Amino acid sequence: METNKLLNPNEYTDNTVLQFGKHKGKRLIDVPSLYLKYLWDTDTCFGAMKDYIRDNLDVITKNAKAEWDAKDNTTIIPRNTLDRDI
Image 1 (spheres, rainbow, N blue to C red):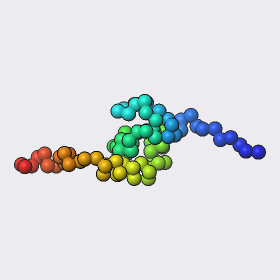
Image 2: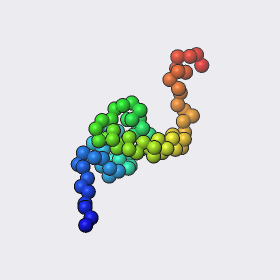
Image 3: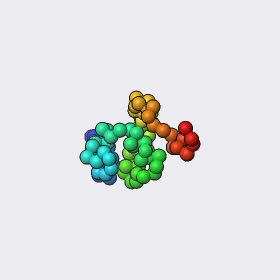
Image 4: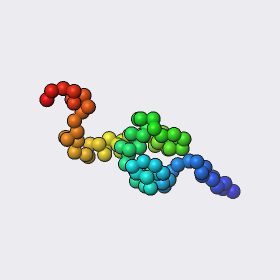
């Protein structure tokens, strides 16, 4: 007999709707990986969100790099250049 595994209500999945921030109301699968990587890197995610990102970190990191590479980043001025005379 197959046992049905009940999903922990505190466990986030790709279909969990984000309840905060810039992408509030989007399913996690639809949130840009750059944003999820930012939450991880800045240690601003907790609980089930942190678990979700940790469990998917390899894919999130790979996708975030692809998203970054696809952007036109030529207009971004690195913070350290703001203090120098150009």
